[in-house]
Image 1 (cartoon, rainbow, N blue to C red):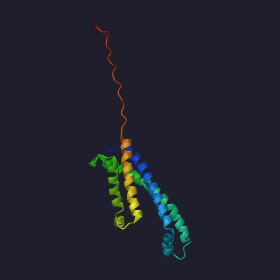
Image 2 (image 1 turned 90 degrees about the vertical axis):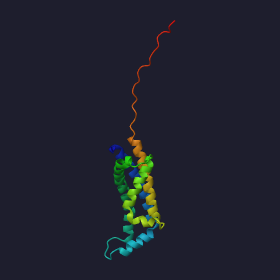
Image 3 (image 1 turned 180 degrees about the horizontal axis):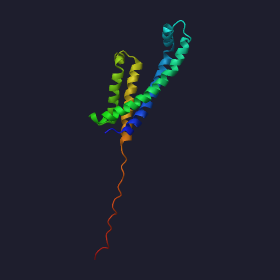
Image 4 (image 1 turned 60 degrees about the vertical axis):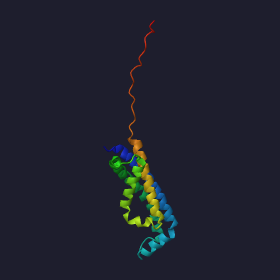
Length: 167
């Protein structure tokens, strides 16, 4: 039986983590490759455009991390539910490894067109995979933490008292 509360909590938090890391990586890469990005925008910009390539770059520089955060949050909620559905069907003991495994499968499905870049040294794709695996591991840890029910101690019977020593 799926624990929706634990699924949503763990998915929400791991999604925020995933979104923050992806936003930071996106911002760094967009900043590192600023000139190349502006050049590509300029090459595809229509002559009668009301915005310059630099203005469009600045818009992308702002929206890229914002979109990563938003998609990370919603993706985390979905991943939390997926994890809740499949966690007991995976024959592993570690919640962290289960989370990383589910995250890997989802990453491979959603990034099938980028798989060839893993072996070409494309750091952006490699970092995306690493972030997905770490976030999946965190998802598993958080799910375990949120799904553990606190033990309610039953009051024990009063200890038996012994009567006066017999003579």
